[in-house]
Image 1 (tube, rainbow, N blue to C red):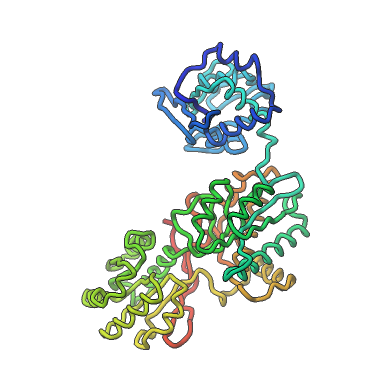
Image 2: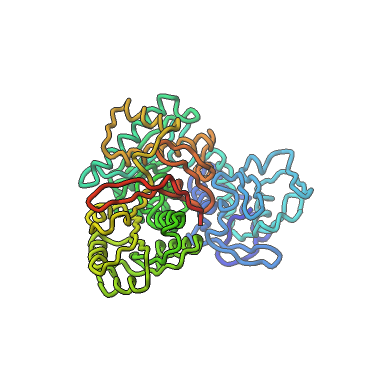
Length: 517
């Protein structure tokens, strides 16, 4: 049991423990339960200081959130595997079951009571005086803190996460309703409401109806979610504020399912589940495509990126090594404005350029290269450069490529894809902003599946484990979705499209999956 600690290590004596139990705190005392909840989930004491504890025969010190009970025993107290150890269920009904406990290895003892539980916390001994598993730290809590934690464990099994009741489960989203992004926000909102309405007509999930709370921005979300707590966020659209959105969700321990963005990054919160890859992974798709093309596979590469030491540059180096290309040099994107830098790449024999800069920088690059008679193949993971590419000099015909995480013309034959089209048609959602509608539908499909797998006794932790366990899940109008430990991009790969100067677009690849890094 990895739980609480104290402000400075001290040993609770038998007299101190007895004092805690002579005047026990009632399990109905709201303030005591609130303190116990804080100790259990946050690893902080009455004074708000990080807990401290000692671990193992060497009495190694631990502190802060590392020793919060929920880190090992889970938000619901029922235990979860960690490092080869399966912490026990510590809900009060389980601890006090009258026939006691028998553990792997043969250790056995009778039921816990308040006194023996306090002894287990502070001395690491079970009710029979046996030594508890070495993975369980020893703690020194104030008497009131021992009583508060005990009080909380007595209600933990009946406590539900925010947004969940017997009859309903409430989801939240953040969508702009005016300004340039308002039309897209309204398209996402219409799809979410259509999906929720259809799902509720089919009986909801495990007997619960879903409700949707919509906020126009993060400030409004803070107010509305405080008044109407939500279980998770689904398909929010916070254009230009993706990092703030993730911080908002993290602070409230909200799972963030399918945000409408192509800014997925490897550094994202583990509570955020992206649907499609961002720029760094699309750059890897382009190198993988080139490696499979005999005319491109052995060429020397250069990359124009916002930060030569950033995630896109590092992803390119890793993929170049994996694909055994001839090497890649990363430059700042604004180096494309310098004709000297362009000339240097020509003289080095660079034949492939990965470009992740702006339209202005791209136009300067191709203009300078054309004047020098240098026409390398140019690849971009930035969908926003499509217009600039069609304006490139005609000598770049057949040499311009882009990577996209989804294609409107990709065949949609799965049952879930047909359900998406049926819902869109029956609810008269129209064809505008199809990409936003696809995101919203897929995000809701993932939420529904996660809730079904988590079961009637749903919690945020169980839901997260269920979503993390999805493998090649059919979410409808997107490629199959897979998550896993450390993987938070569902459809990891993309399509490559040839872009013709003064022309159009032509698909030149099927879906290219890339390996998880």
